[in-house]
Length: 360
Image 1 (cartoon, one colour):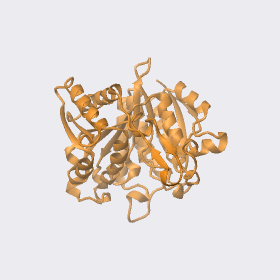
Image 2 (image 1 turned 90 degrees about the horizontal axis):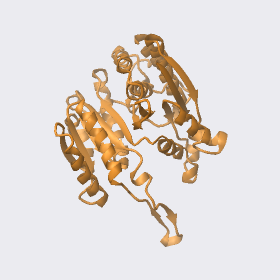
Image 3 (image 1 turned 135 degrees about the horizontal axis):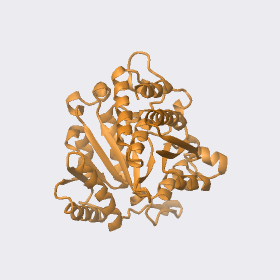
Image 4 (image 1 turned 90 degrees about the vertical axis):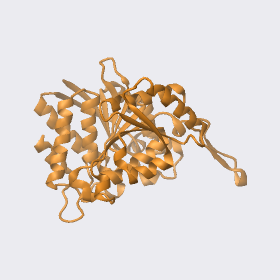
């Protein structure tokens, strides 16, 4: 099979973890006899430096031409006080919009080898296996009107949380379809006791649930959900959220997995003419510029994102399983980066990537 993949290394440690994810994809291509065609584009701070835009037109074109896109991370401290349109994160929002990826899938799983890495008690973390489905192209991050106006005591800022029925329906169906292949339970998160937006969200999710009578549905208010993720995380199978709630809650999943460097993600849109899901794949972590270039970043999130790409965009289940099995074997071996190894000599980013390849 031909795998036409665009890589967007981005900023900070993005280039380092993406390099190891590509190394793993190359190992998969060799073992399973696929043809890997790679291209590379600019996104984020590095794109601003070279082109003046966080999302250059050329990058958008390359993303639309590729079968799937693998991203590192974006963000640099030097842009913290820049106007919103000139921040690296605007490039991330832009590429999501260009590709039309509306559902962000973030699996959160506890590994036996990392039980001690979580600050929570072992009996709470052991056996955690959930997937957070976050709506990605609506809500407060995209809603209008927005902006800052006025001056002095009357200066004000406005952001609008906006959802249409169609946006809620399509991400809900994604969650229910995933649940059918798991433990058949969806937990929908909202703030319907306060927000009209959430009241529509809950009503539409209930309507969609009628199409999936074999899947159990329950609802949690977002503040209670944040608490339950810590008190009883094993109760969750598929967690369905709007954009901002999912952004916050999915990072809480790092506490369960032992490190934010462990969390992959897949942003999925509609199917292409070939029947594959259009996808943007990236680790959940940020660009961590303070450790960039030191060969110490955890690449497992990026490698897991590559495995998700093989599964969702190319339908290569056996290949995705080979990557995930190799990751678990490396974790069991203890050959891991410093964030997962409080004592002893840690492995480098490259050593972890090569170890995964050797098990593949």
